[in-house]
Amino acid sequence: MDGIEILPLRLAHLDAVLDLGHRAFDVATMPYTSWSLSSVAAHWDAQPDACWVAMEDTGLLGFVLGSLSYDKREDWGYLEWIALEERARGRGVASALVEHCCDALFGAGATSIITDVERGNEASMAMMRRNGFTEGVTVTLLVRPNPRMPRPSGRYPAQDPARTTLRRAARGSRKS
Ligand SMILES: CC(C)(COP(=O)(O)OP(=O)(O)OC[C@H]1O[C@@H](n2cnc3c(N)ncnc32)[C@H](O)[C@@H]1OP(=O)(O)O)[C@@H](O)C(=O)NCCC(=O)NCCS
Image 1 (cartoon, rainbow, N blue to C red):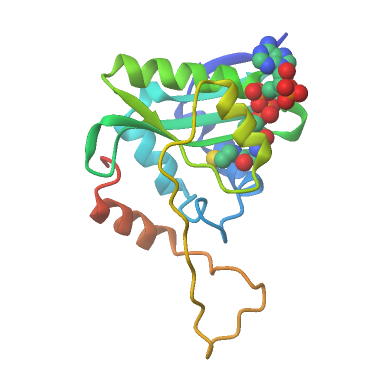
Image 2 (cartoon, protein in one colour):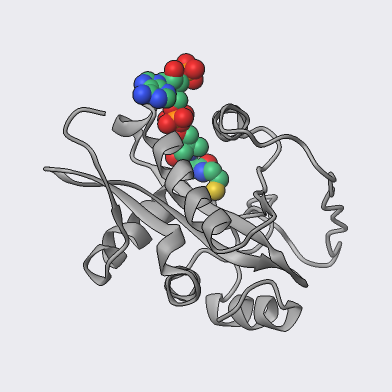
C-alpha cells in the first residue's frame, strides 16, 4: 500500500466516488440498483465516520460507505458499498477500507456488521471472508418477469434513484 492513504470521505471526493461506483456496479442488478448520488449522500449524512476513500497522487483509488442500522435493527452496522479502481485491486486496499469502516461502526455501537454480496462476485466474497465476514441468512431474490414486456437485456430495469431512495427510506433500511 505504498503511497496510498485511507482518508475520511469529503465533499471534494463525491464526484469521483459516484463515477467509480457507476463503473464498478451493474445498476441493473441487485444489490446495486440503488447506486446514486442520493445513496452516497445518505451514508455520508448518517454516518460520516464510516465512509472512507483510498487516495494516491493520481486521485481516488476506491471507497467504502457504511452506516449504522440495517432494516429495523439499530444495533447492526451495514457495510453497503465498496469499490476499487482495477489498478488498486489485489493490493490489500479493500481490506484497509473495510477495517476503517468496521472500526467506526463497532465504535458507534454496532453489535454486528452486515454486508451483501451478489452470487458470483468471487472477489468481493473472498475479500469479505478475509476480513472476518461469514455467511449469515441467505436470501434469494426470485424473479417473475412480465411476459408482456420485452426485456432486451434480459436483466432488471435500472431504477429511478429518487424512487429507490424513497422506497429504502420507507423500508427503514437506513437513517437519512
Ligand atoms: C470487491 C473488491 C473491492 C475487492 O478488492 P480486492 O483488491 O480483491 O481486495 P483486497 O484489498 O482485500 O485485496 C486482497 C488481495 O491483495 C493481496 N494483498 C497484497 N497486499 C496486501 C495487504 N497489505 N493486506 C491485505 N491483502 C494484501 C492479498 O493477498 C489478496 O490477494 P489474493 O486475493 O490473491 O489472496 C474489488 O474487486 C472491486 O472493487 N470490485 C468491484 C466492485 C464490487 O463488486 N464491490 C463489492 C460489492 S459492493
